[in-house]
Image 1 (cartoon, rainbow over the protein chains, first blue to last red):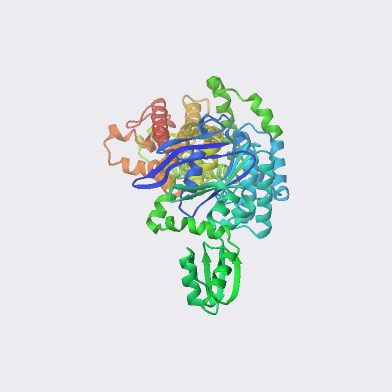
Image 2 (image 1 turned 45 degrees about the vertical axis):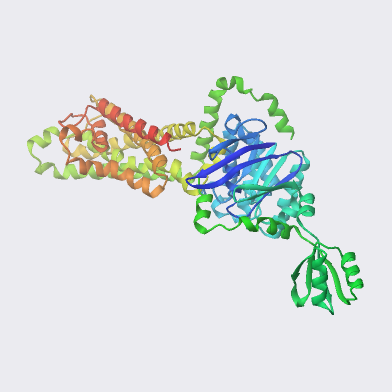
Length: 309
Length: 271
């Protein structure tokens, strides 16, 4: 369980995270979604006590991170799989982590097994592919058998097999009753993995809902229409409150009116429809709609917003 | 979840967290020692430092034997066979071994692994102090071995001119032990330097400048100040025939200790 209350982080004049509040609950996968530079990593670093908030607070299982006596047993996190010294073997990397939190060596072989790294446990980390590093990072996160796990962009750079593996792992961790919090800038990935979504844009929470609710609420049904009397149809539908965009092949893309209402309007005005096709609205579209006003960072702001320990 | 449930029962409540402080240090020591010993470069560094120290000691002693005939009576009078055999370890060996201290922090900052360290052990100053302790504890026996072998090898070289001394001579054993102690203190200084500079190459350059460059630039300083330069203090720590412009060996160790503590303290405000 993670609780974030009015969390704010400023770097000089740039506000990376602005009065953010949310709860991440156990038993489900919560996606932390937002464009690059929106404040996801900064928020995660503050949850882990790596960055000090300018104001506000974070509680993990009711405690601040610094109060956790053996933090790896409460929170397991993977921030950056490449952030690791290459000269040590995978097993030895996990061993020092285990030692730091009084975790047994037996658990080290267990997590190597879970991550599918047992065969390469003795190999130097420096020779690992990004995918193997990612697996090692996840093994490290699971080391303390924590009730909360946190992953920052875990599928970046993974092959399709690795993506499926991570997706299933997240779901099974949630089924075991753990709090699973994972960030991504990829909406499509979240649609498949997350039960709940927290969307952040320019340092503020812009949505906090179950994935299903989020789609229903944010994706208006679209209907593709073509008629012989295209211009008249557009006029008629606009009068009835529809919003019309021009699609490909001169078709009209209508939002705000159902297929039945469009058909009815056409009949009354004696318009001949040649095409009437409801379009599936996707989470991807909902996400773009929601974040399009908040992605206007320039490069300078991005650098400011992503720096820090 | 079974393991988690189990440990939740054992976890000491925060009200008694103060009594849990000792195990926290012990866990940090164990973790940092595991880090140190599982890096192959640690052992490579120890072997290289020992080899360089001993060979350099032999070369320096041989060159003194070679120059003996051209020395003035006064130079012969003040010649210190113990210090001469230990210069390899206290100057070059110290720099190589202190590299372990530099990298203890810089390698983690450069790769970003420091974030794993601080999420596993959120008490950052404890991590800094533990890193210094583990480095010094590793460096001391290596430096002592290198100092001892350098001394013995150097004295063999002096046998030809009958200049050799033994560990039984007054002040000689102290010089060998203080040599190793001085190198350990320099390695702690290096941990602090790594914490302040955070880049391996830059911190290493600073270390070399302080130890080796300090001796050269120290010549520009008045004698009263020159004796406190780290390089001069290193020399003083292994000196048996006391000469003007050098601190007493004990005072030299104290000065090096102050450098180590001050640098580490400064670094503790940056971690």
